[in-house]
Image (cartoon, rainbow over all chains, first blue to last red; front, side, top):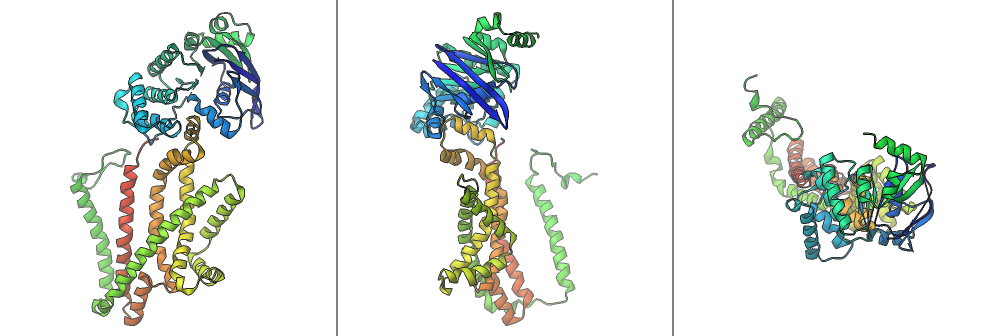
Length: 243
Length: 266
């Protein structure tokens, strides 16, 4: 995937969250956005996902500019999958229905086919016995795996993961990270916002370090983690890797 | 205290409901207490109820009761529609529609039904050349208009109870606005709205009694007429109370069942 962010600016109530974010990556398979809280990572991810409008600036995916108008955005959102920190499954639907709803209503798959796809995905994420359960009956890790299954069910060209493990305890986080690792091995492109530096380093081939609404540093994961060029990056990594 | 287990149950959330015999026993006790109060009051009145005086008018009661049923049912359907569209209008991006709905809700909720019925019947309906022949229609529409404002607020609250993260999730999977309402918001809002909605339906059935002032011969008007002819006030109004209870109790019970069916944790 080719990704270009062109001077993206975003304010919330006069507070500058993204202060002209620019980034150009020729061939990115997995990109991790890391940095201190409040640095604008999630906002940037939401703009890439078409869930938030930038105040100015824009982005291109594979040389196609994303048009920030409702009809165009609907198409854009349908072409990518998004996984949130807080799972965001629909509580009134079962795990299976959470996956089949977009397949049927958004992507026009016949119900039988949608169900077959959903069952296959549940199987794959080791949740076959949970198809008929509502989100409240599932553990956090199971919910997040259902959310990932839902996000990839339509074979999106890009998957966005917004701190997918922050709300989970370590054991459940590991289950989810395993699932993401598998997706990477299958060749799915994704952008990941995470606080798990170890995982970011392991799974991402590119890393962008965001702080104070700007990209401070970006490049190959090993390079950024081992020999950070910017003082801000060095200070941040020293802090988070201390324990 | 020994024996207290016959009369107590846990009120912790999620505690199992008391067993059937326990419920029956305690329900009977409560019912007995209520009955005793009424029996005592009636006995104290030293008045002998003369049911024979109203017996010849039994058909009027039945007819009025049936009229109340179909008028309420029609107004219930119409008011739900009115409330639903008014609630959607309040969330419309088109501002005149939004304010129209707000004005409607505030005016209706802030004025007595009695005044609304009189204004509609004597002012609005004639202006639109709706003749006296259609007084039932005017009555039903007025009642629906009145109840719709309350239902609008109930539905609006239900829609707003659906969290932001749900809307975001619906957006992210690519649902359109209409699909978001259809598959995400409404199914979740229904659960929130059922209990207050049932209360509103019960009110609507009772409020239909006010239509008697424009001469719709429903249950209350017929009871009043029987009273006027027989001077048997109590004998006319006790059946009235019972008749309304027969209509309103099942609505409450039905809603409890629906509530249980739509139960899920968020």
